[in-house]
Amino acid sequence: MRTGAIAWVVAVGIATTCWSCGRGPQQGLGATPNELGLQKLAITDAQILADIKRQFAADPVLAREKIQISVQDKRVSLVGCVSSGEVRIKAEDKVRAHPEVLGLNSEKLLVK
Image 1 (cartoon, rainbow, N blue to C red):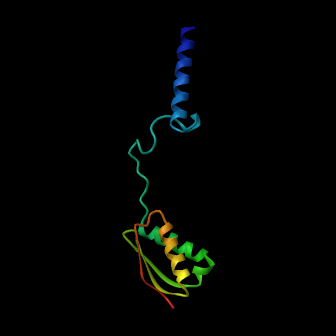
Image 2 (cartoon, rainbow, N blue to C red):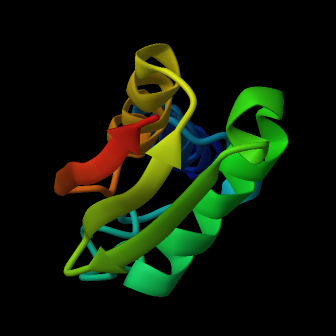
Image 3 (spheres, rainbow, N blue to C red):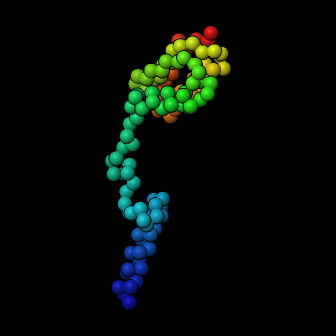
């Protein structure tokens, strides 16, 4: 009988640990990745550039514009001519919406 009680206490402890850290029992016990010293992989400038180019290409308005995009140290530069001030704002907003972008230089993104 005593062994059964110990097993029950251990089972309850395991279940409590699993659900308290936001995981079900099928995902295992223990520390979260950050507690284990694992860091989220840093996104590169090339990945930011690819993301922004993909967003511009998917937007029917921005896809027609001639905008050169470059990224250095997570700072994006936009160069070119756009058809209107609204288009310029749209391009700037897309860049600013990217969570990894630290800065934007659009001084050379001119309106025709």
